[in-house]
Length: 135
Length: 106
Image (tube, rainbow over all chains, first blue to last red; front, side, top):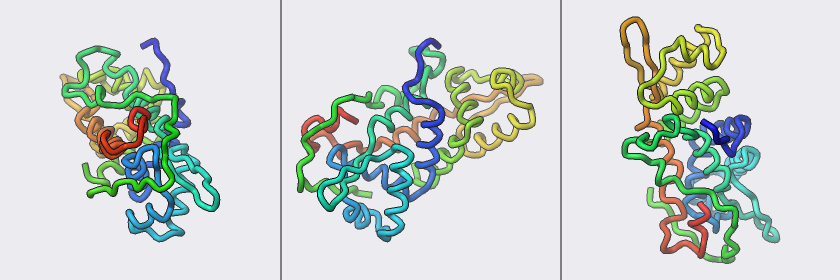
């Protein structure tokens, strides 16, 4: 029971509220799948069949919730999932699960939860076409 | 998991008291906790707690079982793990095609 969670309650609530909407959840999942490369708004609009104005609204909401980061590249904005916040949220929810007992989570997803890494990949190539999602 | 189920779970958790309640039960583990003890831990009124327990149960995040006079509440770990897996599904589109290091980051 000793360790403290990396995320505070306010941030966790913001992240949860940000994700609790179907379009926004789809945007985040799309960006999580794209990894550090992220996507431009146009690519997201195409993938998610979302009107630009609607998408823009949701992107702003997600940015405010800290779930995505907007990287300015000249006239374009590249959106990337904030893995630190995603992992922080997951860690927050599962923090000290079963009182820290080793045998908790039968068939655990806990182990497969990726750990946050402070280093950012600088490798995001300009036109590296991210793979499309299947579903 | 379907997107609408994930949204239901997330919306249920996106409330201060329910988040605290859920985390308390996650820490307690599968044996769960009777409502009275939960109320004591969280310092909430029984009727408020009852409302939030119902919300979380309806969303599918909690399981309850009767033991004598007490009702024990425990997290539905299957639902919880399903949600976490859904959020991180296919992260970075699989390691092989991802640019260097990007997957280690997520």
